[in-house]
Length: 212
Image 1 (tube, rainbow, N blue to C red):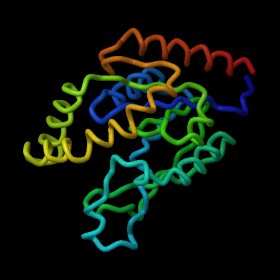
Image 2: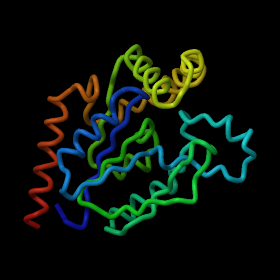
Image 3: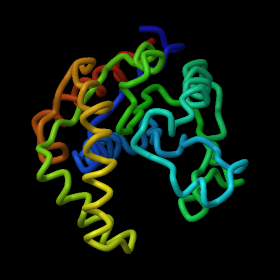
């Protein structure tokens, strides 16, 4: 394996599936090593040209909400060991902020998000594709707890959004990407066996690179 080619791992799954827990568990195991994490949520499209009222209508669970062109451009730069300026999305104004985050290239790149397996161009840049598969009842409970506690939402608003947006988008766009996964991980961060297997695989890759 050439040191000039970082390994790319895609981690997808529905909202509340535990994909972020899986990603963080893998990432934190390698703290201090040559590994980085990119969240697809940072790459929502810039909507600064739209009136605020129009931005409020954004469906963040739809593939068209993401600026995959920029994400792919940045990923290709990182694959060439070039640093990139990752955008920051400001949910209070529903568009991209003026701030960016400098991301330095690493030997292992984890891309995490609900729709990272939906775009064929992204999939073609991945070496390993994971899908975190969790029952719908657990996903809605986790989302409800998160949105009420962390985002100040009401229970009614969370349920309404889930029924009218999250669930249909999941069934139409997210769930079908499971067929592209090399590995399907049930129950997210609670599946320690699957996480340990991924950690072992990444460790092997890093050790191999250290000899090249």
